[in-house]
Structure formats: structure tokens, C-alpha cells
Image (cartoon, rainbow, N blue to C red; front, side, top):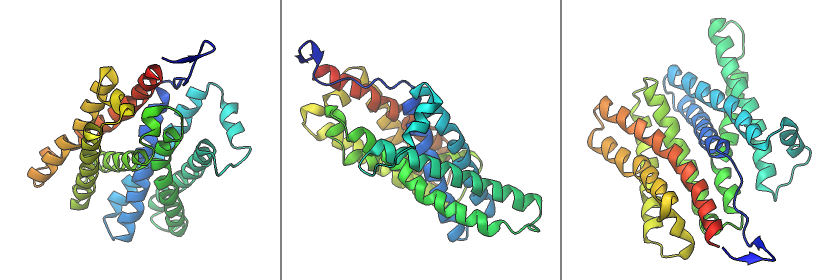
Length: 282
């Protein structure tokens, strides 16, 4: 590593395991909100809409504690909300998380009240409005983390600033669809969504392997490279093959779903490990 007056030229990321876990949970939750809204507007089953709302709400409940755990003290998260800075991915992300969490919780709560009251309490309009807001902020939540790490001086992240938002967003979409499949939903549209996400993940992996940039070496070598390749295979080619060749088999779809979720989670940790390796090599 190059040094300047005894200090490293590029500081390695100090984030702990909670941050890649947050990237995964937040991405899947945000994508689930998008699926819930799309499913309702497309006239899909009420059970799919309900479960997608609750997956989004569960992720919304888990995301802030993961972020706060890494920050160390809750007041640090509150301080991030004192000012909104459009030019700061961290500031935009914090506000997006708050807006998403509120909307996702409201949508799930409205669904609960509607079912408990057998429709006698008119909360459906409120729930649908909250769901729409959750979908909009969820789309931002599932992609902004890629913008966040891309807007740094870590070479391997900066070199993929345009790739990371799409990569994280589609990875979250594949995970959300897979979670809903494991909850028992067999809608063909979920298989199409998850297969599309797997296509993007496969192309992302191929791009990483073929691009000759020195900055991408941590994604191909050492421990970070191994994790990257395992995560990429599990979230891309494996589920894609299972979904295309076994699209009529629920066993194949569930296996693909498990593979997608595992690969998506590993991918987040792989990018964190690659960031540390990249800083070390600089």
C-alpha cells in the first residue's frame, strides 16, 4: 500500500458486517414494495400483495437497527436527518430509509386493519397510497447503496459506479421474488422477474471477468475474489438455468430461490471484502 507521511493513500472501509447485511435486507425489502404495488395494479392475488407488503415491512423494521448497530449510537443516525443534502448519497439514503420504513409499515398496518375489520374500516385507500410511496422509495432504497459505495475513492468501487446501482437493484428484486416464492406463491410473473434478475447478475459477472481494469483485480483474486465468484454464480447462472429449464417445476423454482438469496447475500459481503482488498493494494 502506498503511504503519504506514514498514512495510507486510501483508507480502507471500516464498516462491520451489519452494513452488507443492511444492503441485502434493504434491497430485498425495497424490491418487495415494488412487487406489491405492481401486483396490485396488475390485478394479482390479494395474498401476493399482502405478503409482499409484509416482506417490505419486515425489511423496513430490520434495516434501521442494522444501520444504527454499525454507527454505534442511535443519535448518530438521528444526526444524519438534521440536514438533507441532495449531493450526499449518505444523507439521501438516510431520508429514503425513513420514508420507506414509514410507508411500508403503514401499508402493512392498513392491510392488517382491513382484514381484521372485514373491510368495515375504510383504510384500503390509505394502504394503497402508502404502498405506492413505499414502492417509489423502495426502488430508491434498493439502488442507492450501489451509488453510496461507488461515490468513494476505493478503486474497485469507483470503477463500478455505474454498474453497482443496477447490480444491487436487480439483486434485491431477485431476492424479493425468491422470498415470496418460498412463502408459497407460484405466480408465473415471479419466476419471470427472478429470471430477469438472474440474467442481469450473470451479465454482471461476465463483465467483471472480461474487463481488464487493474481496479477489478480484488473481484477476481484472493478471498474477496472467491466470495465474489461464488456469490455471482449462485445469484446468476445457477438460478437462471433452474428457472429456464425447470420453469414448470416448483422444486426447481424453490431451489433457484434459495440459490438467489444466498448469492445475493454473499455478493454484498464480497463487495465489502473487495473494497478492503482494493484499499490495501492502493
